[in-house]
Image 1 (cartoon, rainbow, N blue to C red):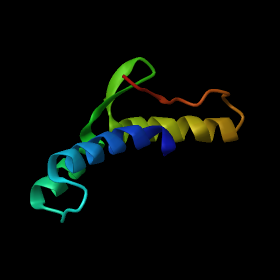
Image 2: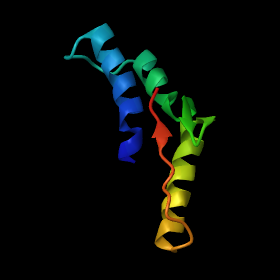
Image 3: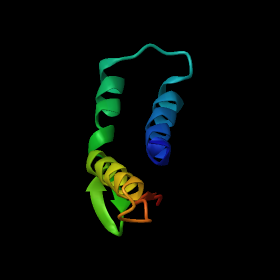
Image 4: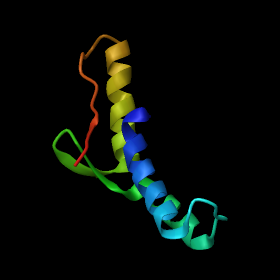
Length: 78
């Protein structure tokens, strides 16, 4: 899941930048965090919601373990 960490970090850093580093979780912050799975990312040249991209990455890793492929699909950072 580390290839997707920069996307989460971007959201969290934005929350901290806007509210300070000593903060309590508010409903608006929770709403921002809950939007992470629906964020658009580019994987294999196509835009896809992060949740679907994670599934594609894990499926490609499984194919590597099965020896049916030698390529893991990673998101392309923009």
